[in-house]
Amino acid sequence: MEKKVHPELKEIFALMPKMPISLQSLKDIRAGIAEQISQPNAPESPNVETIEKIVPGTDGNPDVRVLIHRPKNQADVLPGIYYIHGGGYILGTAEMFSQSCEHYAEQFNCVVVNVDYRLAPEHPYPAPIEDCYSGLKWFAEHADELNVDPERIVVVGASAGGGLTAALTLLARDRKGPKIAAQFPLYPMIDDRCNTASNEEITDERVWNGAGNRAAWDMYLGDLKDADDVPIYAAPARAEDYSDLPPTFTCIGDLDPFRDETITYVQKLRQSDVPTEFHLYPGGFHGFESFAPQASISQQLTATFENALNNALHIKQASTI
Image (cartoon, rainbow, N blue to C red):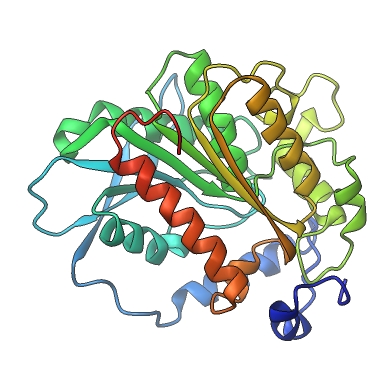
């Protein structure tokens, strides 16, 4: 792994601790995340306000907590981002990504709804995706109240958030639910079978790897693990029909266990005539841009993603990203 990592990422990679993912390690990992969140962080943007809201669940599901990040003194009708955090379906909170969501609200002059969905193994599939659907449905139905253009709501998520993004667009399509202008499933976690070459190739415990991936999927699927009929809304890679999905942007490092499933996903989207932009970053491990944001390869990813996001938000009814 050390020989393959991009030169600009080698220094941070050498310092990263091992973090094996398992049911047994989950409690300690969550405790570490909670402690990290409690520490003083960068000051909030003076130009953005954050509001907590509990929105109703759909079809008998419980209510869902969301954080709404929007420009202060908003007067104009703005586009919207529906943000879904990552964490392997078993980790993470909306607060962990508040700073990113505030940045999007300010940078792109938009309203961001950041969903705090339930986590496995306590709440396995379908709880997380149902929470995400409930939040999106509320966002679209209350667009007027939020001063948001319902025709310009895009969905963004990375890792498991990317998997939930890909699942949500399938679910919204099939339920004839809210219109999604574009989707950004970044290095998405979409294939529960964990049988690709890249999943087997990445074994280093300093990064998200094949063994941890398998453990997280088992926790997410619960009684469905190892089933032949896992629903496409749990594992979007199992879908056979990708038609009528929104324009898509995705990217991934070539040392990510999700590399091969993402490439296959991109191919199937294009075969279904879905406008798709895809970038592969050599020597990039899972989430490398978060670990080394100052590296030029990370800045390249961020600039490319943000340019595509800006286009999707501000070019009304664009046919491509």
